[in-house]
Amino acid sequence: MGSNNHRGISRRRFIQHVSMGMGAVGAGLIFPGKLAAAALTEASGPPKRVLVLGAGLAGLAATWELKEAGHEVTVLEVQARPGGRVYTLRTLFDDDLYAEAGAVLFSSGYTHANRYIDALKLERADFSQPDLRPLYHLKGRRFSMGSGEQPTWPYELTEEEQELGPMGILTKYVFKTLPPEISDPEAWNRSPFRDLDKMTFSEYMRAKGASSGAVDLIRDTQWFGQGMDTSSALTSAWAYFGPFMSGRFFVLAGGNDRLPSEMANRLSQSIRYGVRVVAIKENDEGVEVKARLGDSSESFQADEVICTLPATVLRDVRIEPELPDDKRSAIANLPYLDVTRTFMQVSRGFWFDEGVTGSATTDLPIQEVARQPYSDAGGPNTRAILESHVRGPSARQLGKQSYSEIIEHTIRHMKKVHPNISQFQEQGVVWAWSKDPYALAAYSWPGPGDVTRYLEPLQRSHGRIHFAGEHTSILSGLMEGALRSGVRAANEVNDAD
Image (cartoon, rainbow, N blue to C red):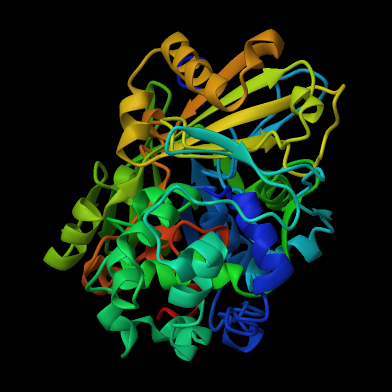
């Protein structure tokens, strides 16, 4: 992508609240190791020739497992880098600063992610937040609060909800109401979870007694809030709440792309970059994949294929024999969330002068304001990055604007949060996932009914063609979901006749 396309409570503060006080609510409720899809140890029959389409986390996990079991694997990746939507921007900032443009969060409860992190001896790093007052801009008012202070939230709340605040409201209406069966990731298609797929997350909160004001407060102060009126409550139960209910939360030292980069280094002899898949066809010999390499065409033959392309991209790939109706419908209609992230490099941490955090919770058009790198608390005299993280329909509309227009828009609204930012802003970088031709959106975002309608068809193999990716997991939008889907597909290929 060219420069024009580079692209709450904040997610980090949410994580901190959970880490400090909420872990006991859901201890043991997410991803116990005994429920993890088994890693492969050996081939169940003669070694197979396997093509893996895409070198994101799903494709890398599938390749890792299949090669460990002795299969012959070739990965076809259209980009010049691995990782897909795990993307760390590195060369665009000064002083070795970097920023996550894609996936943000790992958890100690992520069974597969931690297995690969340990195998590669990667260093974990805590989210680092300076001991400063949290900053808010809600309902036209900028305010901060010190330790132990309770703000008057500018929403129509009950007396109890006003006292509880955002995290207490989530505890009362969400964490304490989710069924205990959430400990089993395979339970999503059974009662009582199927009923959750009939409603949005905001409808679920209201059904549990939350006032409209409480729903509005959560919408404006939580990183997932922009989608709570459209997302399936079933998806939220696993993908957006389960991972935060137990375990320790972390990033990777040096950037989250260390995981796909090191996985790809381990698998480097199997990966071909710059290959764009255009068609997949099962034939008498196995499966043929037709691809473009620059201006030329090439065909690849294998016994089995694992396709990890996002549904947004897969819609333009020809598949023969034709997919069944339910699978074609799932690929064509699965909703995705748009995300546009704008990164402002500043010459120093000027917010320290006021004693407030650089990150901020806002209901402004810039949505979540986050300070990066996540693992560095920074200081008053060191360069840093302030990010505007916009999600949902607003992100797609924003992404349609020019580079300079997005920067101007961001600065205009960022001044309401940090009035002095213009004195210190040095450069800006924009990454709009809707403009990335290899993703076309940030991650899947199932609406009411979409999980029970689409997930099984998305997971189902089609002859010798298998499918993986975060959109094929109940843990949609998560790195763990992508990794698990890759392991699942690898097991399918290993067990195929």
